[in-house]
Figure (cartoon, rainbow, N blue to C red):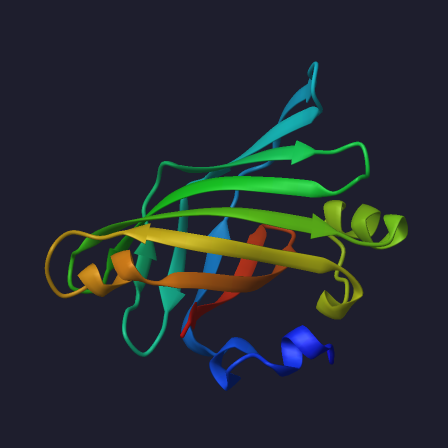
Length: 164
């Protein structure tokens, strides 16, 4: 992008820098269909387990998470997810994220049937936020994260990055 306003910005405002936080893989039970509601088509993915691994924290996803999905009129799916991460050293951390998934109709249809598709053929992004107790992981309370995802038949995998 090159406009007079952009060109006049200090260098730190001209790009976004990230560093890897972790990769997380979620197991999701078969989707529960709520159906058409006054606002949209609703469905829920129950998350009984998963794992995450990174340089600064790794562990498992505890049973009890859920992905409240809205399929919008433009065929995009919005995600509203709440999970409890348990680190390898036993610390419980709440992770919540909103997300957006969309792509060509044929790709999304194949994806929702559980077929293998190229992750580059559709858009799937999330923005996690964390609530960690005081101690070793409380730095998570003071960061913004972004992630890029891919859906497999039994659940998604995300590469999550800290925004610096």
